[in-house]
Length: 468
Image 1 (cartoon, rainbow, N blue to C red):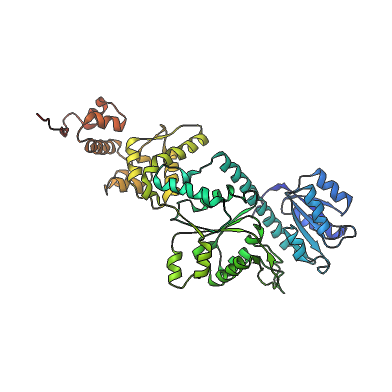
Image 2: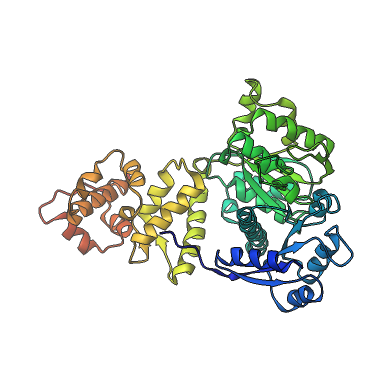
């Protein structure tokens, strides 16, 4: 038996002068474990708005002598600017959806409507509020941490990226961000938005690869009232939600042909037309597209519109792979370990041998993979110094050049054998210098001799030739 989530912390106001209809909606919403307040229109609704912190308001469009729903929306917004409002009406002619939605309502429902549809829209409205709150939190975070992890490092490549982001952020032009997975394309887009002229407006990301073609079209452009058997009702898409702000189209290479055409039309005319509508409305957004570097090839193959590609790439930012800036790995490691340490109330560092392992790895998952590897090692660690054996197996296997370390882990691992292998590797690194090998391993010379064994043959340290 499925248990409904506890939504008692969410407060919803139902405003309707029809007592029977109001009670029916209250009971249905309350069954979803929401905290519901219901009231007729007029002074009682205003009193509820002044005395309660509300998340969603569901209001009939009739508000005194006004039947358009606009007056109700204006009053609710004035009293509670962050609340999401769903307007219901029995007279769509008097209360047109286009005017209400453009005035700021989250959703519009023509009566009669299925109660289940209302419940779905409440959930979406709450999800939309979370997106706005995350954007606000992101702006605060980026204000405190001017350069997030993707910008950490002193390599020439990262110095150039920082300069370019500063230049790009000041404009309103479209941006195309290219880079392998894990290089931080999403974060760069957020930094551009949060430090640019649209920072106080919405930032809305959309992963083009996460939806089927038809669904993606609706998610992007919105849709009008559905026909018979279609109870979706009017819905704003991401472009409309972000009007005045920034939209990130992640994995833009996944845009289907029909959506490419409509998106190009929208960008050229600066007017948005919902799916199924003949009307269009003015729109002002900054578009940032992100992809892994395949768009140019798709254009040559005829699988992506060249005119749209040129519109998306007014400004280009190419993020380097981590293997191409390995000198930044120490800075990135310190950055991530500081954050992990703050979360746990501890301090962490990377041992010298583990540091060599991190710098020699190819990092196919880039900065994201490095962050996950360090988090993995921290979970295994108890001493505060991260050792090679505490990192994921693929790093160890790559570093030790095919040595079958996994054989040591069959059953209970032999720490003695593992220690001898590390010692032998340290001695090779130091060309037989025992003092340097002991320093790498963080042990004394006495412990080093004990690990090696009393009858072992030690490699001779290489010596520089003396010149007369």
